[in-house]
Length: 402
Image 1 (tube, rainbow, N blue to C red):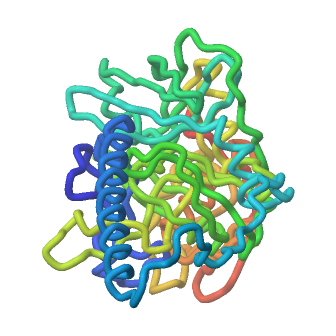
Image 2 (cartoon, one colour):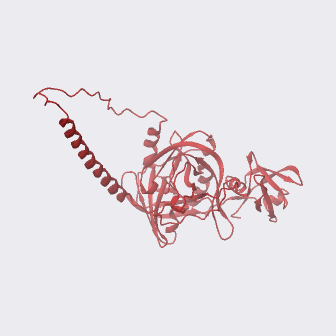
Image 3 (cartoon, one colour):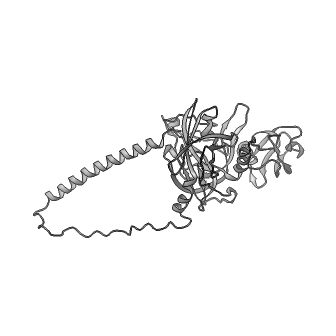
């Protein structure tokens, strides 16, 4: 993501906007930090502060000397020529409920910085405390480099740290659960409802962009159910989810941190950004341009429960292969697996799926993302076009674990 990044991003679909519109200068990428340790960040900041103080001191001295040189006569000894400068009331008033300040105070103790090392390199991201004894939610791509025996270190809000191990990962939704060792008394985050969000609603993002821990940014929900596809595996399965889009500044290292509402409840996991390529910079041109994406918490918590229980995460499926129709016209059904949910509902190859319940389907990514927002066994209404005629069918979704 940055010109010093160690971990590679997930491959993206070149020139592909979430709804299929051509945009060759933009790409969606998962977020990861270039491995900058927070202690180094503090040393750098301290050095910059010291330099600023020196420059400021010199400027002040020179300014005073210049002022005295322009005086006709020195001021009489003991005289008071300096004007009285009014000062503001410096009392630290309690933050109003629902303000960004109050949200930050509530959420920061539940956000951690995660540093990883493995055979493939090193990097850092963020995480959300789920339990007092150190269960932590983050992105799969944050801990990926440590999946084959690497090291994970968690840095907590109070300055302490602990090693952690991976409890479970889910590549399809880019989520992971890790367990910090020998910790207690942590502050779990409050889990909210992403299904209650509205476009335009204020939100706050917390994390460690570029290794700068405990960073708070704010914005609004720019869009909901935005299909985001950040990776494609060799077997054709994709890392796709129906994202919360926000203009809160999100950068590499924010991955795995929370997106919260103005009550301080977690509504999403910050995971990816849309970037505009800069000429001559390649991926080094990546950064916040007001298009960040978070995985909705409603879609994540059932998977978290499965991982904590030691189970393999399962996902809802229709049992079909799909392709894109004409621009924005829907997802075209390819192969229908025998005995699948789609087969039972009477879907055929060539049908164009245009809606799932009330969610409009514009292309194959939108269909995959929407179906993954459900759970196996959920009943949905599929609207599709066959031979120019719109039809609908009720489908009970299968599980990819069966």
